[in-house]
Length: 442
Image 1: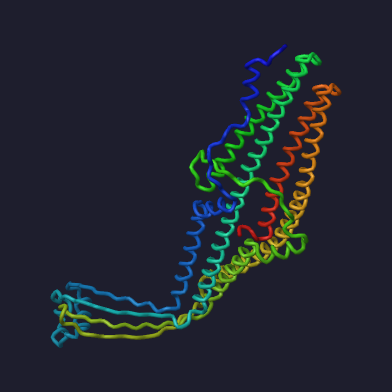
Image 2: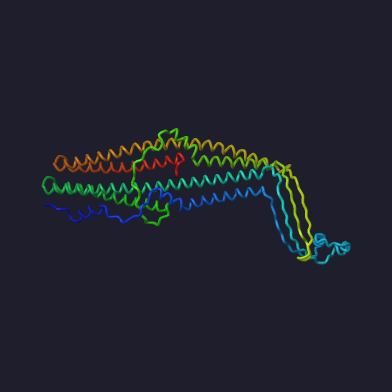
């Protein structure tokens, strides 16, 4: 009676499932939340929003007056300085008109404290356009952050589903290994009964070696997928989690037209295009403001004295009107450039709308197909398993040879793999559809 060698026994046992260490559970929502909380790319986008918000406050400052306070000390015998300081200190006398004193004055000290203010009463709409431009920039930064958040969430979902899919594929491959062990035992029993030759056992061993190589490859791919997920959720390298299993997916929205309407109302790309439009129109308004007059007012009060404690007060106020008559055609060129940029932005927005429609229709078709494939894959796997059991029974009764058993086992493994891939693709397609209609991330 022939017995399997110790080497063959070890080969069969080498790739059987082993007890896994306790792993912390991690849901898909938790994975996405960890990415949002820790990924530096999102932090960078958030900083961009904060910067744009500060730019809005900076632009609004044009509506407020400027107030400056100055405390100064000066000393010298420069004729103009000495003359003006004496006047500011209200200490000028008739003797100071002497030619020699005017040309060669004694050194004089001036302590000055001044408060000055100025404001634009009308700036041709420049400040209003600057505020509009900054506000559009804020919306642009916010939309970009939302896009970054969406892309990171999508990447996390993709990595998560990839790990779950590879876990399921690895489990299916290990089930195939277990089935090969059972087939080996059946073949060995028939060899011992003298019904078949040792060639049947060796054929199963060859099949098992192929499955062992597949298990090793899938396990390596699974480890790479785990590290990709860890990098996104900011988990230490080598960390493993107990993830949610693959589940069947239903069609999110039956009507493609309804999905397109939803996307056109919610997609970040449209918000981005609208912000770019507002930005270009604000730039055009600023260019037009250069042709308008500006009206400003100034006022100030100062105290001057030759010592800190003896100072004389004086004040002034005034207004001015400025009109740009000619600036070397630079203003006209700037306006023409802004108008051309606005036309380009309008055209890009229309292109964005068309791209979104196509994106939604494609995503709807993909998720519809993927959901249908789940049921097909599940039924095929069930039928393949039932057929394989029949083939095993027939083999034990000598009605089929080992080649038929191995072919049936391959069919089971292939059906399991396709079923796993169908469920993973359905989840991926469902998430991609949610992104396409602007409902992801939630």
